[in-house]
Image (cartoon, rainbow, N blue to C red):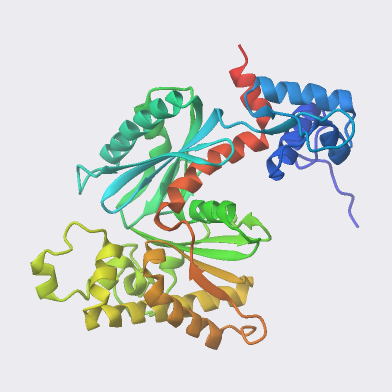
Length: 413
């Protein structure tokens, strides 16, 4: 066998500052993972670090505003009760932004993962350029940052959720549903905010929604797909507790899986994409002319409009059944390949779960090889339409939790 040559893939020797950064993250990880306050002694025992080292690291985290001390546990019968440590509800916060059919949305999440602010701004320009959309988003972001500051929070970063593949957490390569192509949304947003005090990133909305649902889940979710839709139909895929991004970070474009090679033309340039059969626009196309003319649902979002009309329109119910069939066939193919055990209907699809779940479940049951002895659960996602914007805010918090050293250095006087 040829000798393996040393190259760029080999790890560098650990420097003292790298060891400290790693241990800061380790301590913070243990505090974040425990629902109850954790003492310094318990941290030393759990991490194997010496108590003086733990004390120094804890002091750094306290100084950085990442954790806070809580009163001693006086339920202990013997000895001096230890002071507990928990994540701070002031200090760093994440800001998420997203676009919907009728509104722009901003969400602030504190370091403990609690939503502290959620704002919906009507879209003043229904058809607008990417630049104008970003400028409008920057305006509500600035207002959200001021609101956060009034609550003792410092926004550490901003993440924008978009319906399409993103390169380098900044450039939207192609989002056919909104007409964006090779648009550097991150740079435009950074310039519109006019401040280098916060980091800016852009990510796919379906993956962000999956992250939010994973955080919010009451039971352990490790292998699931989050079917998210508003402008675009996408899938956030989580395998073994990790978001599946792929080689370039572009996985999950389920809406552009072909269901009919000779089918309807799609905005992406292909024919027969799932988007054309199960997307909200495809379902709305079945609305009878008299319903459209009545204007009774003209101010509603597409999903609400579909839900309202489904009870009285056989055409809408038939369109929902067709959508459920197409979704179920596409999801079954995915499940046969990647073996997930749960499908969450998220975004606008969470509002339509009543009409979609049974048909999707039936198709999966018929088409997934292992379904007879390992059933796949299909259900509405708990967060629903706000999942992407909450997930966008949570990515900022996750970045700080993974690398608290950078935040502490950045905020040091």
